[in-house]
Image (cartoon, rainbow, N blue to C red; front, side, top):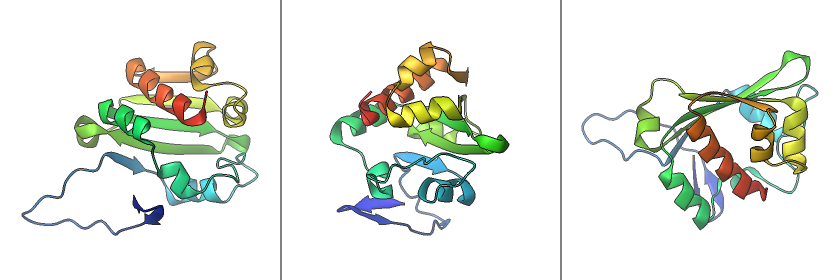
Length: 156
C-alpha cells in the first residue's frame, strides 16, 4: 500500500528476479479479518477507527512522525484483547533490521478496557505502560519508542 496525494493505492506485490526493489519504510502484516475490523467494527471489538479518521489518515504520516519513524529499527507486534476472547493483531517492521527479522522482537498486549481509554484519549500510551495496563514482552526500548510515536500521533 502507498499513499500519493492523499489517495491510498494498493499494489500487488510481485517477486522479481534480478533488480531488487527498495525496501519499504514500514512493513505491516495483518490478517484480512483484522484489517476489516478496523474499517467495519464488530461486537467483539470496540470501534478501532474513529469516524473522523479514514484509512488514508491512519496510514499517512506528518513530517515530524516521519523523522521518528526513520529512527526506529525493529519488528513489533500489537495484540488487542477484545470481548469474547477476540484478539486483534498487527505486526509492524521498521527499518532494515525490522524487515529482515524472522519474527517480532517485541509484543505489546493491551486489554479492551485500556485500549478504549487510549482511543478515547483519556489515557496516553506512556501512562498506560507505566501503570501496567499494557504488557510488553521483549525489547522494552523499542516498545517505548513506538509508544512515543503513537503518543505524538494521538496527541497524548
